[in-house]
Image (cartoon, rainbow, N blue to C red; front, side, top):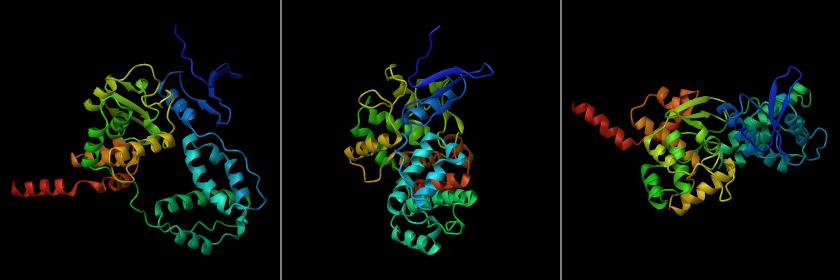
Amino acid sequence: MTRLKLPYVQRFKDRHGKVRHYFRRAGFPRVQLPGLVGSPEFMATYQAALVGAPEPETKTATPGSISALLVAYYASSGWQALKPQTQANYRNILERFRDEFGERPASALTARHISGLIDKRSDRPGATRNLIKRLRTVYDHGVWRGLVPSNPFKDVKLPKEGRGFRTWSEGDIDRFLDHWSKGSRARLALMLLLYTGQRRSDVVRMGRQHVRDGFVSVIQEKTGTALEIALHPTLKAELDALPLDNLTFLVTAYGKPMSPAGFTQWFVECAKDAGLPDRSGPHGLRKAAARRLAEAGCSPHEIASITGHISLREVERYTKAVEQRALSARAVAKLKQ
């Protein structure tokens, strides 16, 4: 029997005789790999760990400072329970704040300071919302541990959401496909994003092991939601033309898996090369996929069965970009009947 050999995977028996597998790589989080080796659950977790960001070097922190509060949060069980890629995303947000304000006393931060921070970042409402949410959690942990007397972020009103990621139009999609020929990595990336409706962190982990019986199996890295997405004929034709020698569909020029951040940077450049507007990134195609489904007459529940959204309110937010012209023509056609 052929044994699947994967780098950085260690196998051992626990005291009950049960075989367990762990992802262990220098500088990366230690991750337990669930299920049977090669199963969708096992491979999804392995791929997430493989492309997850390595732990940054430990910084010294002055006791009582915001930096020390972050160090305590990073050591908490709540932080350790987050998935590797989620940790990488959150840490990226928090470390930028730490670089600017880390040496300030954590207990001295007030609602007035936070209001000034929001005003200063008024041109980045989405990023500001994410920062406040993360710091609210950090201070909640600090209050629970007795490191700060109160949470100044608790009653802070979040700024209104900005435009967010730009939704791709049909013209954008056509222009991209006209520029990138069949068999190119850029074209494959667009097909995976558009016809599965998944986030970049899920698309970079997809491989042939996830395609079975006409469906693409996905365990969403962000939410843990398990999905079975019907394989669209256009995407199937693209995948059938691929070689069989890679664990993932999308790899670097050196044949290595792509990280979510690296994938985004590369894909944005591909969009620029095709003459698309600024902010034409991967998440805009997830929104375009939801828009297409809405235009096809799919219900919010049907759309959520593909995108994996738990909240139908989120689905409605994603489908705000439904082509108004096409919908108005359908509406008038109904009046004529």
